[in-house]
Image 1 (cartoon, rainbow over the protein chains, first blue to last red):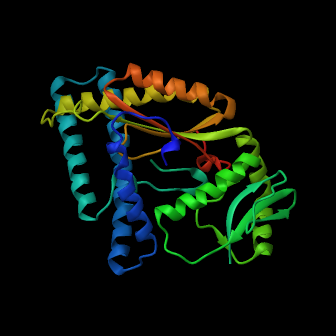
Image 2 (cartoon, chains in turn purple, green; image 1 turned 90 degrees about the vertical axis):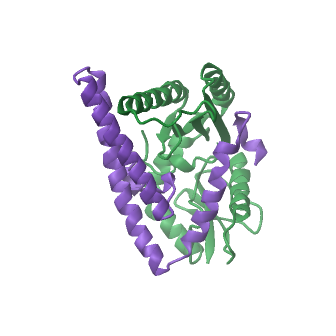
Length: 113
Length: 201
């Protein structure tokens, strides 16, 4: 594995959380229990919500950049996105999903997020 | 049942028990499929096979776990997608895939905030930082694919073999000019992210 590192920070640990995710993905693949079906549905719904969240956030950032919003409006927008972000995190945790799980491979269309 | 490893338009002489199956000017490299538990070690073994082939020829890797009944089925599957495979093979010729990930450095991380405007500031800063990393890297690369997830940047770059060193040097320079980030570059990988004809930025 080491010889695949072309340039790396001194502390690799934050990047290695992926190993655990890989294990999850590998075991999940062959598991078709009913609760996993529910999870699959949650994954799908949360992916769509995450897509909308990101689109709206980018739109908001553009509007802030354009200077069209008052400080109070920016603060309110920011809080809304922050809360949405936290809520998403809670929901992900509830279904045992990692942030990377919230993506869809649309085949020829590429990835959703 | 056999497992598919890669497809190429060049003459491939894979080591037994791997076999080269020719179909319409393309060659699919396949091997016996074994029933076993999928572990990271198994993935690495598969990876090593593909990388050894990559030393011999330009190829498109199959997704791990791609299986067909027999060699005739392999030839049929490859033949049916011949045109798009040829396009993709042209695209990756002489190039390798390099992966880059960036995160905000631990400790330099942001204290939790309850301020909405501060939150938006950070989001803008992170998106901006990702752009500052990605744009020069994408400029050196033939092609690139951005991934999702919690990383500030997670991307795959299709880079000419002879440009690899320059690319890595650029990653190092970007790391130096962004001391608040951790930047990781791995490879060279088979062009997994560029194996589909249309999946491109």
